[in-house]
Amino acid sequence: MIIDYQQKLADLTVAEFANLMNDVLTKEKQICQNDYVFGLYGLANLLGVSLPTAQRIKNTGAIDDAITYAGRKMVINKQMVFDKLKGRMIK
Image 1 (tube, rainbow, N blue to C red):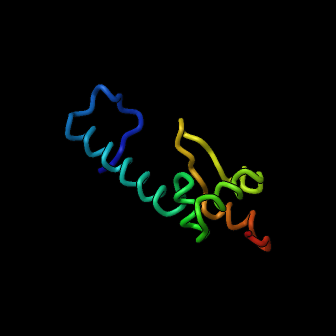
Image 2 (cartoon, helix red, strand yellow):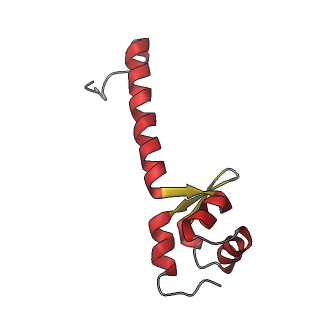
């Protein structure tokens, strides 16, 4: 499907709008699954540590740049975490 960004949203048919939203959501889901983890459980699984240890790492502030919040949900950039913790000892 070719997207005409000059076309008004109100001029789209239901099928065109559904296809557009499906494409956007699919791409967003792929990006989120590959580059990010969510919450302390995600951080603990990413680093292979327990939940209390993941909480301690977060509380130190060492990975604050890698963490953003979407409401109450914590979104953590995997690559930034590894870059920030490179060469550090996790206790």
